[in-house]
Image (cartoon, rainbow, N blue to C red; front, top):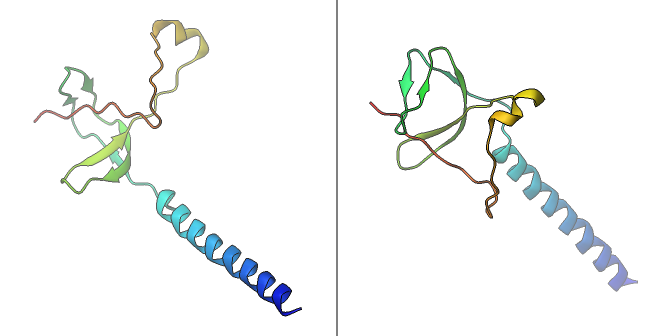
Length: 102
Protein backbone atom coordinates (compact mmCIF):
# COMPACT_ATOMS: atom_id res chain seq x y z
CA UNK A 1 0.00 0.00 0.00
CA UNK A 2 2.85 2.37 0.85
CA UNK A 3 4.53 1.73 -2.50
CA UNK A 4 1.35 2.63 -4.38
CA UNK A 5 0.93 5.80 -2.35
CA UNK A 6 4.56 6.81 -2.99
CA UNK A 7 4.14 6.08 -6.71
CA UNK A 8 0.97 8.16 -6.98
CA UNK A 9 2.49 11.03 -4.98
CA UNK A 10 5.64 10.98 -7.12
CA UNK A 11 3.57 10.97 -10.31
CA UNK A 12 1.45 13.92 -9.16
CA UNK A 13 4.57 15.82 -8.08
CA UNK A 14 6.18 15.16 -11.49
CA UNK A 15 3.07 16.39 -13.30
CA UNK A 16 2.99 19.58 -11.21
CA UNK A 17 6.70 20.34 -11.77
CA UNK A 18 6.42 19.65 -15.50
CA UNK A 19 3.30 21.82 -15.77
CA UNK A 20 4.97 24.70 -13.93
CA UNK A 21 8.06 24.51 -16.16
CA UNK A 22 5.94 24.32 -19.30
CA UNK A 23 3.88 27.33 -18.17
CA UNK A 24 6.99 29.42 -17.48
CA UNK A 25 8.49 28.47 -20.83
CA UNK A 26 5.21 29.33 -22.57
CA UNK A 27 5.11 32.75 -20.88
CA UNK A 28 8.66 33.51 -21.98
CA UNK A 29 8.19 32.28 -25.54
CA UNK A 30 4.76 33.82 -26.10
CA UNK A 31 4.49 37.00 -24.00
CA UNK A 32 1.13 38.67 -23.49
CA UNK A 33 2.29 41.85 -25.25
CA UNK A 34 3.88 42.60 -28.61
CA UNK A 35 6.04 45.62 -29.32
CA UNK A 36 5.33 47.22 -32.70
CA UNK A 37 7.97 49.42 -34.33
CA UNK A 38 6.84 51.87 -37.02
CA UNK A 39 9.32 53.27 -39.53
CA UNK A 40 9.40 57.06 -39.45
CA UNK A 41 11.25 57.41 -42.79
CA UNK A 42 12.28 55.23 -45.74
CA UNK A 43 14.84 52.68 -44.61
CA UNK A 44 17.45 51.15 -46.91
CA UNK A 45 18.63 47.59 -46.25
CA UNK A 46 22.08 46.17 -46.96
CA UNK A 47 20.91 44.35 -50.10
CA UNK A 48 19.39 47.47 -51.66
CA UNK A 49 15.77 46.86 -50.67
CA UNK A 50 13.84 49.72 -49.14
CA UNK A 51 11.18 49.66 -46.44
CA UNK A 52 8.90 52.65 -46.85
CA UNK A 53 7.76 55.05 -44.15
CA UNK A 54 4.93 54.01 -41.77
CA UNK A 55 5.50 50.24 -42.09
CA UNK A 56 4.77 48.35 -38.88
CA UNK A 57 7.30 45.73 -37.77
CA UNK A 58 6.86 43.36 -34.83
CA UNK A 59 9.73 42.97 -32.39
CA UNK A 60 10.82 39.35 -32.27
CA UNK A 61 13.71 39.51 -29.80
CA UNK A 62 16.53 41.59 -28.38
CA UNK A 63 19.98 40.20 -29.02
CA UNK A 64 22.74 40.47 -26.39
CA UNK A 65 25.08 41.83 -29.07
CA UNK A 66 23.09 45.07 -29.04
CA UNK A 67 20.60 44.75 -31.89
CA UNK A 68 16.95 43.84 -32.22
CA UNK A 69 15.27 41.43 -34.64
CA UNK A 70 12.03 42.69 -36.20
CA UNK A 71 9.47 40.72 -38.25
CA UNK A 72 7.59 41.93 -41.30
CA UNK A 73 4.47 39.97 -42.20
CA UNK A 74 3.40 39.94 -45.85
CA UNK A 75 0.07 38.46 -46.97
CA UNK A 76 -0.01 37.29 -50.58
CA UNK A 77 -3.27 36.66 -52.41
CA UNK A 78 -3.54 33.37 -54.30
CA UNK A 79 -3.46 35.11 -57.70
CA UNK A 80 -0.17 36.85 -56.86
CA UNK A 81 1.63 33.66 -55.80
CA UNK A 82 2.94 33.11 -59.31
CA UNK A 83 5.16 36.21 -58.91
CA UNK A 84 7.33 34.29 -56.42
CA UNK A 85 10.05 31.70 -56.77
CA UNK A 86 10.19 29.12 -54.00
CA UNK A 87 12.80 26.81 -52.49
CA UNK A 88 13.03 24.47 -49.52
CA UNK A 89 15.83 24.67 -46.96
CA UNK A 90 16.73 21.78 -44.62
CA UNK A 91 16.55 23.97 -41.49
CA UNK A 92 13.82 24.69 -38.96
CA UNK A 93 12.98 28.28 -38.04
CA UNK A 94 15.19 29.59 -40.83
CA UNK A 95 15.96 33.31 -40.63
CA UNK A 96 17.47 35.31 -43.49
CA UNK A 97 18.46 38.61 -41.87
CA UNK A 98 18.93 41.91 -43.69
CA UNK A 99 20.72 44.77 -41.97
CA UNK A 100 19.58 48.39 -41.98
CA UNK A 101 22.17 50.72 -43.50
CA UNK A 102 22.82 54.00 -41.73
